[in-house]
Image (cartoon, rainbow, N blue to C red):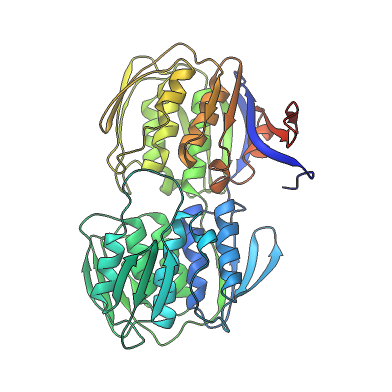
Length: 438
């Protein structure tokens, strides 16, 4: 998106209370893209990667790849050619890596390719303790020496190449599962990951690597086996649709009402979200590669507990909570993954929601209506939840901190406007004049 000189993008403005009607096309999966793009570092040849979401996290990773010497060429809006054949290993730029959580995938990719990686500790959303100890455990099991000091992750294979190893993850970790896979594909021997995460984007990463010549078995189960190969060749691959983006728009229809077809999805990936919406009295009709969501009656209370896939995803917890603020009765939400996921609650209270939090449990007493208010997006998924609440609320809602939202949602204003939402971008000139709507 292009902006005029001297103008800063600051807020979304939503005039709520309008049901949604039409269709929304889902973009490629953020959580797959931020691992598959670093995985291109392992490939000796040109990768053509399709269905790449146009989000700020992807932009940052592509910048990092270019800084490391990769040739990156835009084919069209969602397709990139990436050639890392001539890349030279070097420390990853601090200012870029610190702005994105997924920068830690560069450790696995560079360690696998060169036997050495130096990457700044990642940034991204602050959701409480998100240690990389399980990542480090995997690298150590593969013979690497790892130091985390002065804000840097320094990993080195003494012989210049990591070896196969057996890793039992103490907790189910998506990031650690994917990072160990990246390090293992060019390792000497077999690597086995037990208690592995099973999310769709883990399967997508394995499919990408296998299409380039890797030998990965068991992705999508709790035991993944990776037999190291000498090299990966180039090829083409299309990233899966984004499960969480689809779920977010499904929740938006549930909260605001109306009927929307969510296109370019894999309905099976949405089963846990669909089941919960059905419990809440929302209609969901599955088609081959789309789902139709309808809601014109009341929302029914329900209980939600987030769990690793195939359970209800933690990345959908704030969005479903936005719906439950308007449900008839009292709902209980239990966060089973991150301890700091309820920072958005005070923002909902500004809009009239009744929520009490005790540790990992939130008790939500449904209200008849929410009222628009100025609110802050404190992280990516909380920001999406603010949009959902604003769409359902009476009056105007202003959301700041929208850079969080743009980390994970492509063209969210345009997509919602196309189905009837009254949502605009506010621009504020540098001279502190009145905001301009665009």
